[in-house]
Image (tube, rainbow, N blue to C red; front, side, top):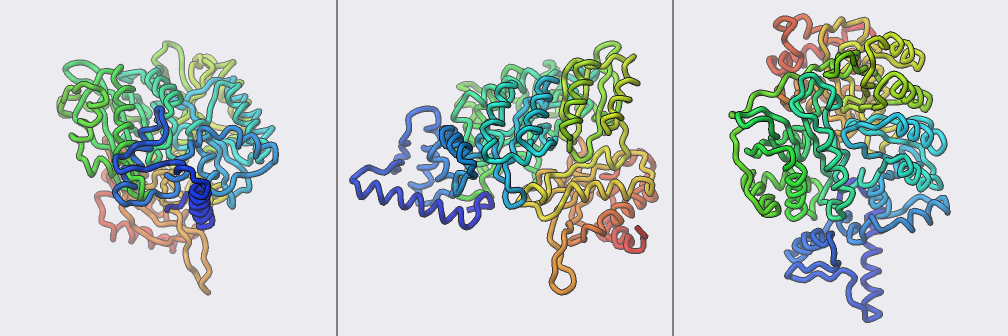
Length: 586
């Protein structure tokens, strides 16, 4: 059992399954889901692959976790239950809380007695009409705002149970969907937010992201995996897609044969691991078939009995890269060409400020605007205002980023000043300090039951404190995550903060963080080291101020980034600068 269910929900599930089995036996009926030693599956159809995998574990004497039992009744087939609960203004109970996530609906009590609806927006790109639709739904059925996520996605919060179906049908009417955006499914497909407009990119990955998005939506067997799953494409643009932190990452690369895609698997930085290169370079048209084949291997071999070991990384660890690839090739019914990574040119450089401000596009006379969002939150008025700017001054696209901000593309150079004025009117900006440009925070305990701290509020407190006190001339990424799920990927931040409850006087507990330093991604990939534990939230801004001041004082010139500085010094040295923060006045 894992944290997706409370103890009460687990007992409910166990009692429900036992009761159903007893009732059917009393009536002389066969078990609803027979399991045989041969691993036969009860249902016919594409999802039979999951039943066969589950049955192999049961036949080996192992017990399926609660989530696997819940998936024996396909969550995609519960529309009537969703509608009935909405008519009764009723939240789901027991295992249905988990099953609702297959439709993108998260009952987030006790943080909020409401649903959060997470969309899936391929490549993180939507148009002005769709953004207006999100604004309308958030205003009519939600809390009047939306959040940009760390997978270049949107979430609507504070949805009452009677409005859940209205949100789902409203999204569909706008050409959007939330299907499979939660639970044990393939999450939003991400890519470079500058795809198609980036002067330096090797390949425009937008079509690949859309193709895979629709393949997932229309293959029932690609739902209900052993655990959640992330896939990203990187075309070599100036703004990274963080593809090496995904279960599958496709990265455009130049080799003597031309531009193709390297494939890496098993990334999960919350478990301190980056994706590993598979040793192949494939043509763009092979990316989606290979992605589906790799997912099928995960379905067949992923652990159904231990959620902590159910991610793809552990299958790769167990099988090894070559065997995993060989199993995928069986589904492809062909062998892929092996190409050493050393035969490929290095990736074009990432610009860590290219997601903020105005930058020239590949199209002559056009620029895009990187809009700064306060920890990813947008009000309804701001959503509509951005849709208006995109439609009247740009090409109509809104491009969300994994840095919890967005880009407006296709702006005429003559319109730049007008766009700046309109953004200011909305209370938004296009400039950011070195801290704010790389500030990432998960939902926090105001909207997530797993979080130990109010990450978004504390992130803004860090930025407010450091601005004006530390004159950074380079960006420093600060990632705040509320729990071990690491939605904000604290291990790859220059500064990573993992929320914790900290004991103070009289056995009282307050919100705080464990501090990690020196993480990176891409060419600078590294897992941050733990430097401090149990720093109370009120101390964190001063600690980070002191660290940034030490960095500016002791770095090897302006070209040394923070992660290199942190990796060059011992944990003891870094801790010493942190401890000195107590002498810094707020």
